[in-house]
Amino acid sequence: MSGHSKWATIKRAKATTDARRGAAFTRLLREIAVAAKEGGASIESNFRLRLAVDKARAANMPKDNIERTINRVTGQGGEGETYEELMYEGYGPAKVPFMIQVLTDNRNRSNSDVRKVLTKAGGIMGESGTVGWQFNRKGYIAVDPTGTNFDTVFEVALEAGAEDIKEGDGNFEVITEVEYLRPVREALTAKKINVTSAEISYIPTTSAELSEEEMERVATAIEALEELDDVQQVYTNIS
Image (cartoon, rainbow, N blue to C red; front, side):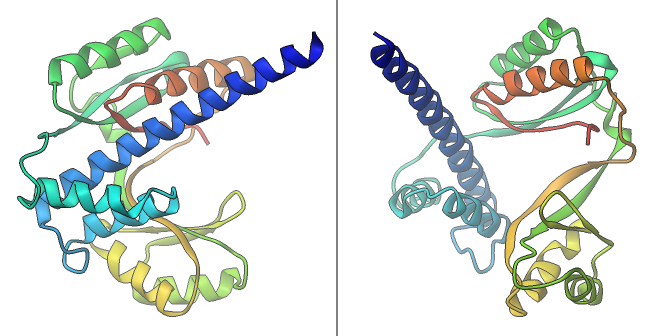
């Protein structure tokens, strides 16, 4: 009986993992679609598309999925869905500010779903600008420290225009103005420094200090938001 119970647990865990992987693929494909629609099919000239494709490849997305999505939205494979980019703002548990990035084909559905999750978590949806002033829109680059060191990354990134470089949790974090994200990334990769991710992000100006119970409530709210199909990213000021 215990063996059967263990197998059932493994199957449930695998189903959860597969579902999350599928949801991650959906988000990545939406980002690819929006980037291609906005700037064209060439990853050489469309930097946003390059970033989206790099993320998809890092997640082991099949090449055919990526190419099919690009072709569809750029007129080479019929008309696909049209997604709208939205940023919802509000407060979550413990009055933690939330910035919720959404790509959706149904604004009303997204608004309702996000509001419902925040309300259930003890938070509240706000108007545009409610918490946005507590974040700066920046370029963010994560670097694998293997095979390099902080001083090298600091020197290369700073020379290319980076604003700040610091040691993160198992990586080096490089912050740039949005317009310097591409040259800094290219400078790092040219020096064979392993960039594990590069994206436009919302960096909080301050960090919240929470109790363990508050942190758990915030984490639960973030997880619930990330499970929504339309939600791409959730930004908060917890460290």
